[in-house]
Image 1: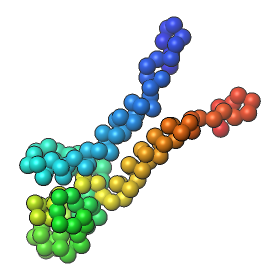
Image 2 (image 1 turned 120 degrees about the horizontal axis):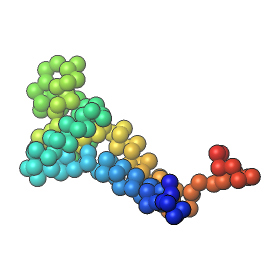
Image 3 (image 1 turned 120 degrees about the vertical axis):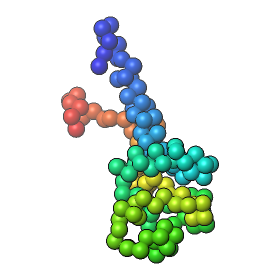
Length: 143
C-alpha cells in the first residue's frame, strides 16, 4: 500500500505496531474484569465477562482468581460457594465470576492465558531482535 507519491502509507509502515496495540488491549481486558469487580465497578467488569464469554468457556475450575485467598479453586469448593448442586450444569458454572471472599476470576481460562500473552510477547521479541521477514535466494519472498 503506497500513497500517490509512491511512499509507503502510514498503515503499511506501522501495521505491526497497530496490530500489537489492538492485540494488547484484547489480551489485557480479561485481567481488568476482576480488577473492576474488586474496585466495585461491577458494570464494567460484567461487560468484559459478557464479551469474553463468546471467546472462551470461562469455567471457574479452569480459571485464575485475583484478589482472593487462592489463585485457583477446586470444582467442589466452587460449587459450594456458588450454590450449584448439579456438577454437570456448565451454564451455571460459567456464570459464576467469583465473590469478594474467593476473589474474581480472570475472564479467560488458564489455557487462553498461557497461549495469547505468550504469542504477543514472542512476536514483539522477534521484531525487536531483528527477526523480520527474510528473502529467499533469487529475490523471491514467498518462502
